[in-house]
Each structure stands twice: as C-alpha cells, then as structure tokens.
Length: 350
Figure 1 (cartoon, rainbow, N blue to C red):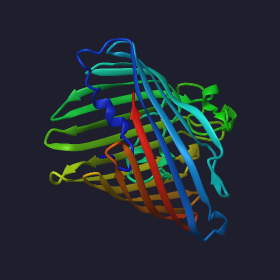
Figure 2: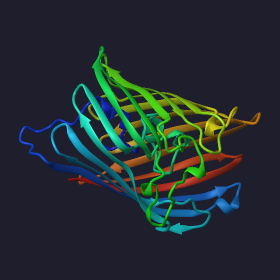
Figure 3: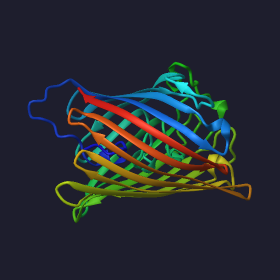
Figure 4: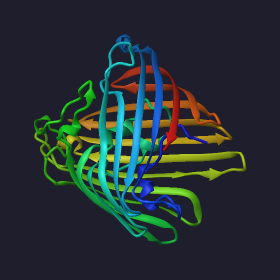
C-alpha cells in the first residue's frame, strides 16, 4: 500500500536493493511517476489568493548500472515551475534535471559526485499529505554540485554516517526546458551560491534491531554566504518515523521532525524554527493521514508564526493507480486560507 508521501531518501543510504543472481551488466532500471493534482483555494483572507490550480508532475528516476557497484543516476522532473496568482490549468511547465551523479556503492560504504540533493532533514520529503508543499520545503538542500559519501555500520541496528561538500548549481542544468526557470547565477545570491566547495552537510541515519520499522535522522548543514549575505547559514535537524504493524490489516506510521536555521538566508540574527508532526494510518489499500507544520521566523526582532494543518484520504487500486483527496488549513503572513486538493498518481517501473 502506498502512503500519501514519497520515500525517505536519506534512509536509502542504509541498504542497497537486492541484486538478482542472474543480473547482467550493464543494465538500466528506474521508474516513472505521473501525477495530476488540483488545488482549490476556495476561502482566503486575501481574495486574490482564491484560485484553482490544476497541474501535472512527471518524475523520472533511472539508474544505469555498469557493474554491481558502479552506476550513473538521473532524476528529472516536469512540473509547473512558477507560482501563480490566477487560475491555471497545465501551464508554466518546465522540465529540469535535479540529480545527475556517478555512484560507487558497496555494503560498507558509498561515494558519489555530480549534481544531487544534500542529506539534511526528512520532513520535506516524508511528511504525509498531498504534493502541495510543506513549510519544511524551506530547508531542503536541493540541486547542488559537489561530492559526498557514506559509511555504513551495525550497532544494535543498521546506521549510516554521511557527508557531502557542495555549492548551488549555476550551470546550464539549473535552467529548464519549456518555461525557463533560470539559469541560477552567482549574483542571485543565497546560501551555498558560491561556485566553490565551501558548504557541507553531515547526517546520521539509522534504526535499531529492537524497534523494527523505526528510523531516525540527525542532520547538520553549513551553507556559505552568497553575495547577498553576511555570514554562514547553519542548520540543525532531528527527525524520526516509526512504521508500526498494528495487525494484519492496519499499520500506523507517525513521523516528527524539528529543524532550526541559524542566520537563515546568510543574514546575521535571522533565525527560523520548524516543527513537523504527522501520522499515516494504513488499512489494506486505504491511507488516512494527518499532519501539522509550524514555522517561527525571527527577523530583525520581529517574530512571525505560520502553520499548515491538513488531513488526507487515499486509495491505491491493485493495478497501481493511486487517488487521494485532502483538506488544508493554512496561515502565512497572517493570511488564513482553506484549500481542497485532489490527486491522481500512477507509477510504473522498468
């Protein structure tokens, strides 16, 4: 049964897919996810925000394996790349590459180089709900260029200590085909936008034999100031999720994470605290989820609190089609909004 959230990528560092004995090399494998979502902001303190947004998201994830250890990996996305202030239907579409790496993976360690997302935080990816975004998206470290690796070890369970050094992608890969989103330039500023390997992330991920289904994440990141900043942005994250098998038909998966950005955006004295909590109740092909997202921004002595609270219900048909509907209460910049979302997803492997 599919949860209304996508995989926790950091946890994949802990193990590699089982290789069939008759696998031959080189070979190619992957998956394509096709998703259509409609978000209707039907009520808002800001009447201009009362819009309907119908948009697709197509994700391609593929691996070209040269040997059992050496591979090239690509992740590409087609989606609406701009925010909209009016009704929209399948518009503002751009395609871009978010991951392009060469990897060397063994049971004991892994190394990689290229364009990737740094391992920091899990709530931006794993919090349950529709694809309408979460406040934790703020601290996702995506589309950076550099290299990294991980060391796997067993200590009452499997654990992985990982690290990477990087800078924000300002190459042609930061642009998109179709509607253009860039490219990003160094003069645009922002943390890690330095075109030099001065930013880094460290993380510890793992679980324990005594708690089957439990996974934790501890992350730290230092992002070098860009041209518009005056100091490094430091990030701290602590998260966990626990899939509990209640009986043969029911599973319960709570998730929680707290994160703190010190000198957010590379600006001295600007701090942001994030809190995410959620749970997924699975029953056969059904998913029922709820989540709460909180952000407290302290800038220039002024504190602003924002939140999202939502609930969703989803069903996955035996042939792989997944449908879901959700409702969200949101408050951002003292503006209250109510949003109804529906989603259709189909994923196939090759």
